Image 1 (cartoon, rainbow, N blue to C red):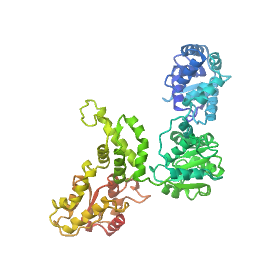
Image 2 (cartoon, rainbow, N blue to C red):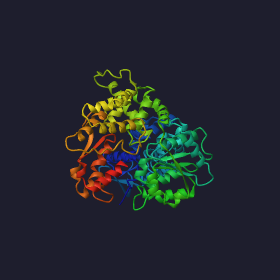
Image 3 (cartoon, one colour):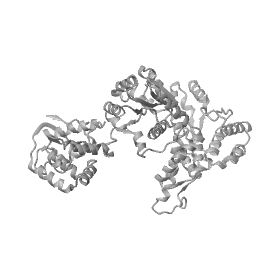
Length: 572
């Protein structure tokens, strides 16, 4: 006895089949038939098929209650013939399927594939139950529900879309797209590459968060306005859930949906890689063939590192794909991007965002959230600030005095940056310029003498403050020499207190614990392939968690020379 492949039905159809299987005992039936499934769909208000039935009832002039009664009468009157094929429910019970039920599932799958879907949902099953040769066809057709009517309705129904693919250009035409900022120069280059005669595939190279997807959404807006590449009317993206469930079928459905247009594959490196590194290895050959054939134009995104490691050596990529590098926008451009998203964020959070908060978000994100590039870091910061402002508005007691007017300003952005980075809000404000000017005097309140060391530390911090330091290097690296008790550790603590408001807000490593050569791996983590590689090192993990901090290597002379070699690389 065969069993239905669990990868075929969509979650909503699985739930409907489970409910139908439970109703078998209610009606004294042993085989699951189409009329039992139809009765389940008519009663199931939460199924995507129910709005379709409601629309059919309104257009065809019948009542759903009448359809339910007639379906129930049909269930009681008929006994299906088992097809020696079963369905395993969510609670591991087995329900026998009738031969007509197999026809419904098979026809439903064909309907789903014709709509470029890889799962059979309740709407597809409903359409299949109106087909000739199925026991429910006569009942549905008496109410005016014919295959032609259902096909026309499903073709226009938003409910039948989006399980596997979505056409971003069509979404933009219907006004459902997210507002995007037009980076004119990059858009012009992208349109130019998509307009060449052959090999029009493009990979957008850049860090996650620099706006690669936004560039594609801007292209979709242009296509919706009729200003896109000539001959390309569709811009299709595959749903991530479909890719995770069945990458091969999802890519095939995406290519069918994008025929004569563009298929967008975010993080395209997931389809490539040697030694089993490809996340979607089953679909690799299909993507390679699509790149070579050129029937569908493919736009992918990847980072420089991922492209070089996984894709640069692939012939299908190297010979048929153009590379377009997407740089990180500067602060001015980031402010303009935030301004585009501002109305939507105000609507989402129910607050008002002051214009002066946008430059503050860009400035603080660039300086203190350096692990994520602009504009993503600024967007994260602004979302965090919006959430902070909305909390008092919806608090139970309403006792908060702040933000009674629901206004977000630059002070709220500063507070959000403080929560994200651990740096006290008082140390992030624009008024701190005078505090930095008196940094030497502040340090001398705790350090008596040591003029040379205090001046060196102050000079490094002020240089970084005005933007003259190398962004890829530490603000300053100092080796404090002297006998015990002259203030070496105290100066480090004073610096931590000045910058972060608390002398304990720094990373302290006792280097007497690193006297052995193998201790290097504890500092920066084990190399690839060794035990503990995923865990990271005692230094690297703490700096990753708090990238803006003071690191004190206490008694560094006791460390093994190999450890000092690693520290030299860090300083460089």
